[in-house]
Length: 168
Figure 1 (cartoon, one colour):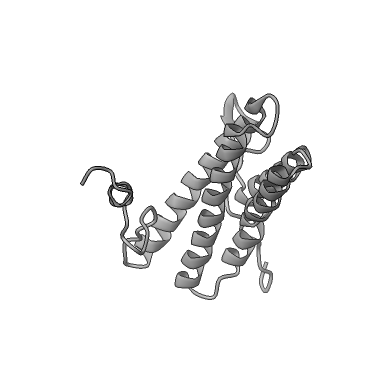
Figure 2: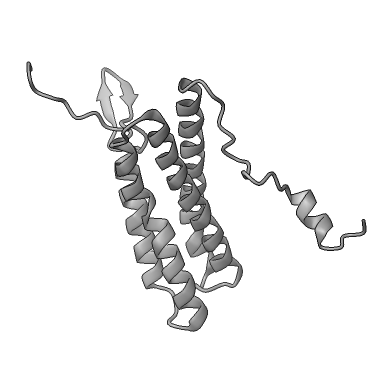
């Protein structure tokens, strides 16, 4: 083992179950989960109708939905903890964008039945939670809290609603 470097994997996706003496253990790998997520996004956009809205949403979702996989690889090769946090935040941003496109796709609906989007919506929400936790943990280890869910511009929904002439 001297001079050899072992690959360390990020754990999070459920892989086949191991059984030892009546106990069940699950193996998790985030890279594998992101790979399957990107493949599912590609399969979904290929089923969208070839119309103006379908093409637009397909292109946007294809970009944002496949982006977390290579950005996660970039995070694994980060040059510093700040670089690592920044790259995790990029993954999080892309996942949140994908979540919005999927919600729009279901609302229109662009696929029949619209429930075809439900599994990807659930997986996107789960991945967002994983990346939020990862950013918070990395930021805490870096000695500073991270405002993961807030905008740098400090604009909340109530401020946006009141600026639309909502009665004030």
